[in-house]
Image (cartoon, rainbow, N blue to C red; front, side):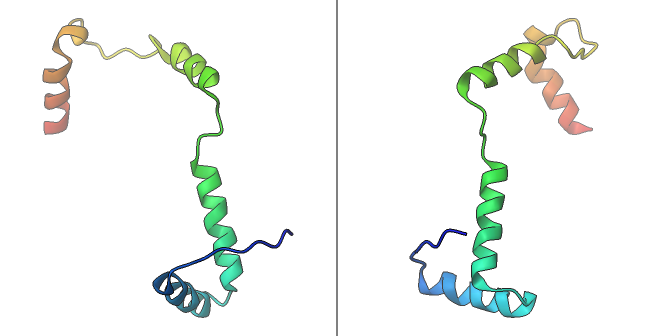
Length: 82
């Protein structure tokens, strides 16, 4: 592991210590878990790959509505009513 130093607010540290106590793990472990969540949640896909994925998805799904391009707002409002 690589040692690093971070600055936390007093409130953050107080809450981390309490959570650490309740879960029976170190504050460092909680910070590592938080870093893992951020890494998993962030998009590691570059702009070109995102565009390729979007292009591949275009046209693959069918709504069953022939007027979806013109009436998408109405169809969306109806879908949210359900």
